Length: 191
Image 1 (cartoon, rainbow, N blue to C red):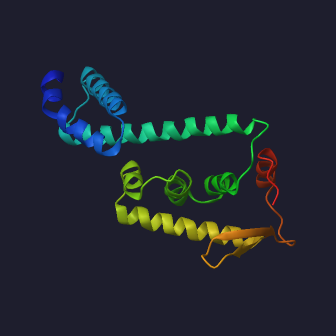
Image 2: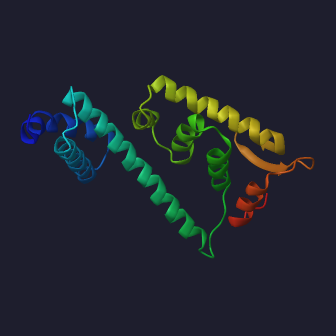
Image 3: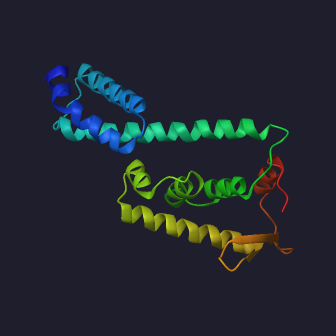
């Protein structure tokens, strides 16, 4: 089959799929363009593809996931630049982000980070990570539980009657890992 024939059959379905995952028409068009380039390159290499529809949707899912990964990296760059600002006021969320990414298994850290730090909807996370919604919810809950277990080892936490954190102090008998101390120093965070 030729590129034009394959592309004409599938491009509208792919664009509809992308639009369900990305809220910006221009970004959706860019992702579609990138998928078309991948198809073109695959055909030029004469890669054997038995089912172009399945192949294209998998490439599209991966391209969408790559887009969101790039967004996370760009956000981290912006955050790092903001941290150099003299008016930067550290927040528990900065430290939570570091702990999630450094101390939890990737299986749990990735969906928990996207959910609780980036505030993305769970269905979007499921789509990005190619998981079912049930598996995504389960991993986020397990991630929260593992994070809480890590924190409780070294931190006494006070809650209000709504269950919100009101204060916390480091336990005297807990020795923090050096990389965590370094991160706390880097963001100028002292509990």
